[in-house]
Length: 272
Image 1 (spheres, helix red, strand yellow):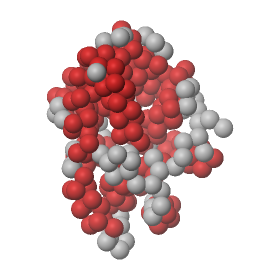
Image 2 (tube, rainbow, N blue to C red; image 1 turned 120 degrees about the vertical axis):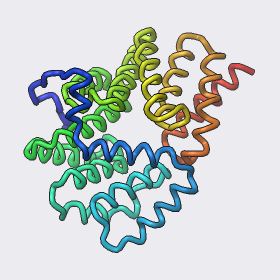
Image 3 (cartoon, rainbow, N blue to C red; image 1 turned 180 degrees about the vertical axis):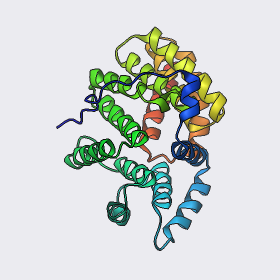
Image 4 (cartoon, rainbow, N blue to C red; image 1 turned 135 degrees about the horizontal axis):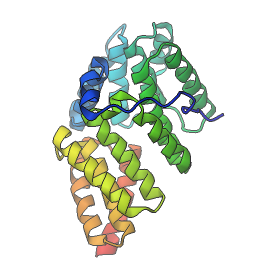
């Protein structure tokens, strides 16, 4: 069964300023931690991961950080079962929920386990009124449906995410624009895709910096738009900037790295 996140009535969309004022501290802390880890060099990620592995009884926060580091290092699900067991026994705090959501990234998309976990988490978040965790779960569902080619569902999930106050915060507004640009690209609406992505790029450059992976992924999407429009030289130049930084931050076995390498090689062949 497909997880349906559209059953909750659509919330009033707050102003940008209001969203910044009411953004929960726990999700701000999580966003800062994720952004910091994303920008670490591979050697530093591995060093930090070794530190977390030695923790005898890790807290939910430590488990989340370890999972995030494993994801950035391109590691698979092996070795995280102890974390899953520990989290299931823990109370449903915001940090436990964040760690549980991180575990979703290690599950095979469209697998039975993935849907079971999504359904359980969705029900738990609604019962506990944990809106920030439900928002993050919606992000996972967007990525899943986009990867599976379910573009109408992916577009509906974006609309659902925009009903949350956190979506108006500075980094999350850029994520919504990135997702909207990706859907427009998949639908062939290249002008709208470019508008959304250029805006997302500007905001992420300001928030994270030009060489951060979260900024580079927007550059990758813009390269896809340029390629679709026949602007091969521009697409290659964008990808050249992405690849030179990305290879020092994310290992080749990472799924995102494979997509980036594939596009870069294709564009390089076309420009030779």
